[in-house]
Image 1 (cartoon, rainbow, N blue to C red):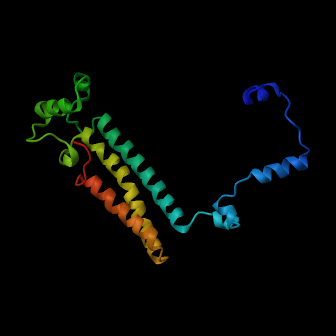
Image 2: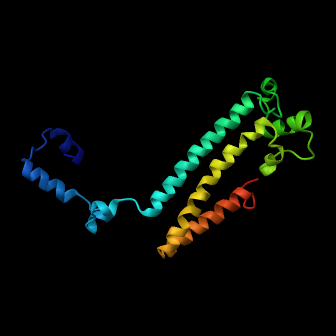
Image 3: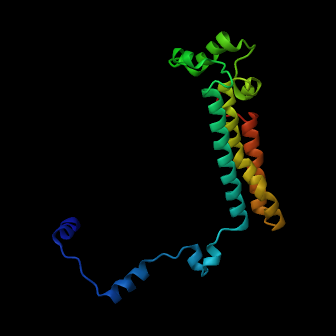
Length: 184
């Protein structure tokens, strides 16, 4: 009889008394890192820098959301005129991103170069580009969080995490600047 058939025919599962069941469960438990060193609830509490990071992130997220809401309202209500009038947008929905940029540059912006990368900063006076402020702000919040915890890490002489936080700031700033580009 094969191994599989032997198990298929065995319908009954042994029922263990509570004491044996608990003992079997304890044997199967794999101690985690905190269990191995006898962690207390204080050991599991978030660190000072984790709480600071979370406070900065929460503030940045709400500030970014407020900025997105305000800039969109300015755009949608027509307080700040868009580069592309809202009623014209459906005419461009079928275009690829590059073709869209060329079309709106030719029809509305009349700039020497297409608005790509950080070029949106030059056309912030247009309501549809004003929305980018909130997006850029939200993208920068992580950098601000790392900069916020760096002094705490340095004060604690936590050199490894300080180096990691500093490298995160450098890499994210370089990526945001466009100096580091992957792809085309």
